[in-house]
Image 1 (tube, rainbow, N blue to C red):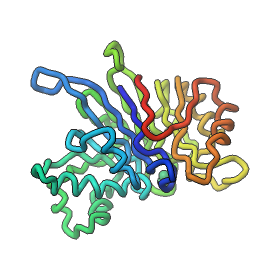
Image 2 (cartoon, rainbow, N blue to C red):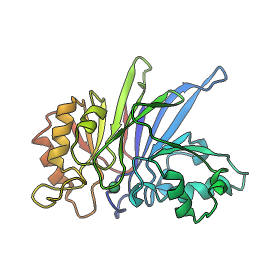
Image 3 (cartoon, helix red, strand yellow):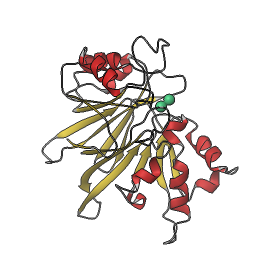
Amino acid sequence: MRLTIVGCAGSMSSPDSASSCYLVQADGPDGAGGTRTWSILLDLGSGAFGSLLRHLDPAELDAVVLSHLHADHVVDITGLDVYRRYNPAGALGPVLVLGPPGTDARVAGLTMEEDLSALDSAFTFAEHVPGQVVEVGPLRVEAFPVEHPVPAFALRVTGPSQDGTRDVVLTYSGDTDACDALVEAARDADLFLCESAFQEDRDTVRGIHLTGLRAGTIATAAGARCVVLTHLPPWNDPAVVHAEATATYAGPLELATPNATWSL
Ligand SMILES: [Zn+2]
Ligand SMILES: [Zn+2]
């Protein structure tokens, strides 16, 4: 399994990065006796579609999995809509979009389609069902309801390791404050991609985001083997949340940066 950071800015895009978008890929059977690379996106936030073009032809995308429907996680699905529907090479057909209840209506609103069926040529929508695993080629996706002002899910992706010898787990927090479901989603994860939008002593409101300190606490409780902090708004000093997290998590800890990749 491979992770590529397409966009990691939190709550809005930044001078250096689009907002949330993460490309997860793994090789697996193509259904015709061969193998191929399977590609899913976790979120597609503001500015991310252009950045995605550096890493993947969107025609080869197998699914978009949305943690929640806030703008910084979903609005660039409008670019994917145009790319698939009006491609000069011919319409690409629908791609799976897996998200919270109401994802289809949210996308219709963004694309200004009054008739939902107009989106059928670009997307096939499905809703997260906690406890249910969705398979996309060799990748298995499970959604865990977490704590945020709108319905939001942490996403646990299980799939083959790069060397093909075992299954590995990548967990993405989405946007959330600390909660038991997030610990469960990140249990023994090989890589825990965790938001840290807030800073201790500055952001005291609860129920919305994690601080670096709380992200580290969750990672330790979950037994995550490696943590990548993400979703940092441009007004954050990354060094602050990194230092907070090292106070509560002793394992390998890095900050997400655009175009960075990890092989699991
Ligand atoms: Zn966000
Ligand atoms: Zn949010």
